[in-house]
Image (cartoon, helix red, strand yellow):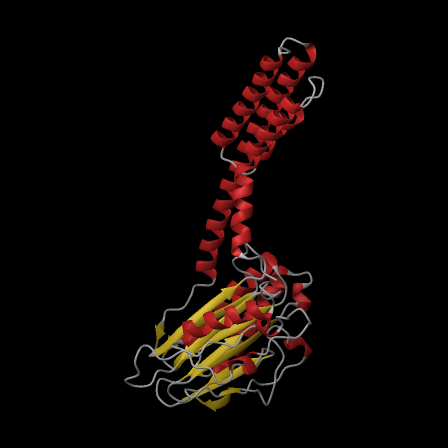
Length: 377
């Protein structure tokens, strides 16, 4: 279950005052116990407790407060010049210097982490840019939800492009993780953008992606030369005519959400192997056609959505969860879907990266905002 925000705020306040509390407890302990019993370890611990949570100036102030408290207690007891007292004061001083050093290291590490996050965000925008909100008269929304906290991009991908043949798009999932998966994402998207403009048929686009992945796998060699593949679904929406063409290469079937809340799955009758697996069998791609009426929304997704599970191991079923729901637009649909996945999984989210793409064909004269029926928790 997710931790309530009130408990999080209480924990943060406790951490903020913990070093001061340690010093106060040490002073009280020294005054209520015999002289031979000392709270020196508490004074030494306070700066170390502050180092991970306070800025350097805060750690310095806690160290000075610990040292002054130690000195004040010994002055009050008239034991400052004893060998034990001088040893305790020296210990607090050395530990304070160590805490300052730790604080500095942590601050520098935090700065490097922030720089790495900026680089990762820049790489995501370069490799996997978010599509414009309107392309070829269609309303578009896309989201990438990384399973690993702090990660920005993995092996899931999407791209949308207006071409002379209509609006073409691809949603896919590269086998594997890490930098090699990101490289494959760049290859697929780069090849798609070129092929979408040049190939007169959607089947031709799929074949261009197939050849690009095979070349990339051969160049890298190793396991990827034999087992690298990408599941993908390609779609073409002509500028005129209420229909959509689909080529599915081993990817989850998209959903068609109608204006009245009805949801149907655009299942592939002639499934094909994922991209990059032509060595195991080759046959011509065949685009399948489906009605795409005005006001309807196409939802494309990767298996991170359908593999999200609750505490009992029950998988998330987007078709059942979306049935009968109406949304203001594609962006509201994706946000509601992400929130519903979090509720389904108890706040943890999907265990795999999740790419979502929603494409709405607006009704002529359709108002920008319509009533939203939220997903059932």
